[in-house]
Image (cartoon, rainbow, N blue to C red; front, side):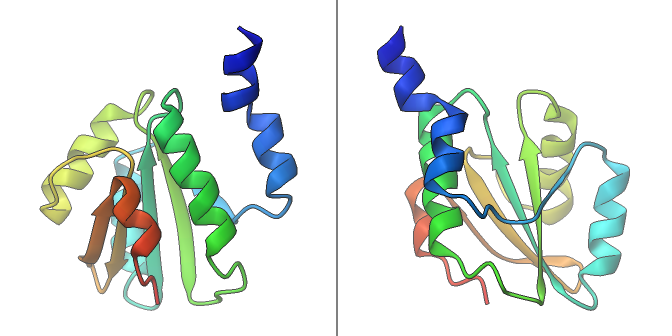
Length: 127
């Protein structure tokens, strides 16, 4: 058990990445309307992931450590797929992007302008 605790322990991830991104939690379908409106003036990023998946955790950690945290024009949203599946389904429907996990969608002017899943997330150009 301690092996898994060491591999997937969120405290360890926080120590490795002491300055995480300023994530806003995406928990309701109504927030998607806000995201569409906000995306008219700035770029929004939605990171969809399973909080119990080791691959999702690893990709999230690598994503956070590889992105410029001082990007003023990007707002970051995180979606826990396990607890908010209906929000994930609405994202897939509204932005016409097939659900995957982990997955990143970049929203600008009310539409998804880029998306990637799994390890492709680490290669994405957010700006």
